[in-house]
Amino acid sequence: MTETNIYDAAVDQSAKDAYFTASQGQLIWTRFKKQKAAMVGAWVLVILILSGLFAPFLTPYDPTIAGRDKDYLNGAPTIPQFCDDNGCSLRPFVYAIERERSAATNFRWVTTVNTEERRYVQFFVEGSEYKLFFITFNTHLFGIENGYVHLFGTDSTGKDIFSRTFHAINTSLAVGTIGVFIAFVLALVIGGISGFYGGWVDSFIQMVTDAVRTIPAIPLFMALAAFIPDTWSAEERFFFISIILGFIGWPTLARRVRTHLLTERNQEYVLAAQLCGASSGHVIRKHLLPSFTSYIIVDLVISFPYMVLSETALSFIGLGLKDPVNSLGVMLQNVTSADVLLNYQWYFIPVIFFIILVMAFVFVGDGLRDAADPYGDTKK
Image: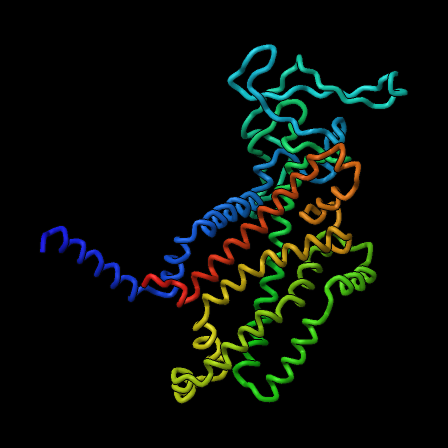
């Protein structure tokens, strides 16, 4: 046997040893990395999450009424450029926007673009104050010295759609996170008790689970919307929607937890823990639930797009979040009119981000589900 063959055999043996001694998390990560679609989705998801978290810094203006451009209502996107008829510049620039009353339009306000006046884009500019991780800042990634720059255009009130979109991603993800966390805790507790004890306890809990699963979400929110006081602040409505989504989203995961515990509760390691005097809660927390942690993580990731979709759908039909809160559902309300479809197509830019966000979650969830399957890797 040559030295090359000996080296290759040693490498193969080392790889096999690493495979058989790897932890469950390492095996999942190894299988997950082999799926290109899941990896692309993961990178896109990381970028969107970071963009949402740092939206106040990445966006130039306040997404609320306070940050609107009164001189540029329903304005088209202003794309920075380097060259025009007057020559080229090393710094990107946009044109000045002028608003005046015209006799040709019965003295209504008319917005015109002054192609002779350049306004250069600057980076790390001072602007409106915002809080990031409980610290107050006023520095934004980019902006212009005089006037506004609107990469995605403006809406009917002059608010910057670019700023609104990134803040909306953060809001929708926050709603999904709170809803998933509540559903996750309820599913583990209810499913754990049902699966561990069985008998009449299991039967009673399953009746409750079936009852919750049969509750239609839209009529429920229509009924709740009738009781929400108009005096509630945007923050109160935000947490209310998140809590309700969590309270109706736990049955699916609870059933999976219950099924696993019914199978595992008679295993030898569970009996050994009980003989050593471990309590039922200790056995569930320390032995049963950790035995399928990977599947719980997969369920959590898969649950996120459904929570985001639920918030978006409810806000879209007017039962969820409302202005001045910026969420993807609130922004999608603006694309329902034929006038927007025909004249203001830039209103659909947040829709593209919404589709990308949901698809990224779906690809990552599918990748994790396949990677968590111990029988999914047929090459070993």
